[in-house]
Length: 466
Image (cartoon, rainbow, N blue to C red; front, side):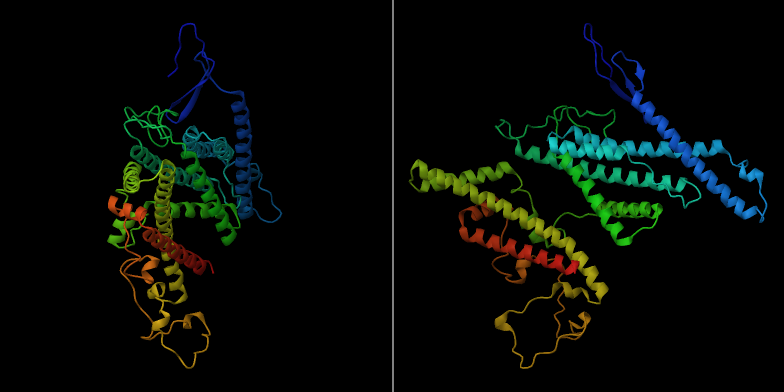
């Protein structure tokens, strides 16, 4: 709250909130209103009066066309005598107040991200987003008889944006806390992030946090990047949808945005963990983070490998440094290859669902997704080659000659080429990780696995976008 010390003057304004209404106090504790706020309030008053007058005039024209006979003038209707102007102004102000409240909640989310951002470029991006939201106004549709429906849809869009952003950023904070907990040690090392005390979580930036309560010394510098990516993704999605569906009026624009946000919300709530479509053994060996996602355990394993190599080979100090550099390089490459494989496998999951939908619309059955290649040495030679199919639906014959194999789970791309040797890898234990670092053949096999998975993902992308 407002604090005052003897002999010290407070030169900063203090902000507080009672309910949903913010208040400002000056350095002496008096409640004030900024001059710029008064100017904007007068401009808002002019705009609301103008919009209300427009809809009143529109309703009058509709009543006149319905009741007046040709050549007659209804003075009462022309003077808007039957319209309750105070009720219209009350409706307009109530809708505007709800719109501003929902907009403020969205601003609070981005403000929380801004307070955790330190990079100047990222802060500038968040500032631009805050500015855009501050100047956002309802998109009035004068084809409607009244303005309440437009305000209702605009408020629904703001609420959906706020809910989606809150869930994503809150999940990001939880992930950051988990990461910091894994990398920190009792004795702080130079270059490592500081541990989070978590003694008493409070609201640091607002009277009520928009995301989560944080500790006094808890910061998440990547929160602004996540918020900016969400904003850019939603804006790009809306641009593509508008280019596809070509809405003709403002109401169609708002409804399209509302439907897109509802779909994004359902996708986020129903999103499964990465790798949920793969067999249980692959989930344990590849997607399990019990060992490889804990930096301290990985560092201890690499240090053990390095100590063993130096002990077994009587080398000079310069040679031992090159051995250490090569060992650390291999370990980093193993971690990078696993990350790329998980990323490609997760994207393949999403693309596979889209491919099944597209192939079903084209007339193919589900087995079309899992067509397996025939190795050259096992292929049968044909004397006469069949002509090219006339249509794409005739590409797969509807008889027993087609491979109609449908697995219970998704498989990695490498399993279509080799089911016995290359797919056998694991990142779950210390011994399996050390095997990657010690053996060049295991590392080379992992490169082949990643290359096959990325190629498979790119092939699905091309097939869907055609």
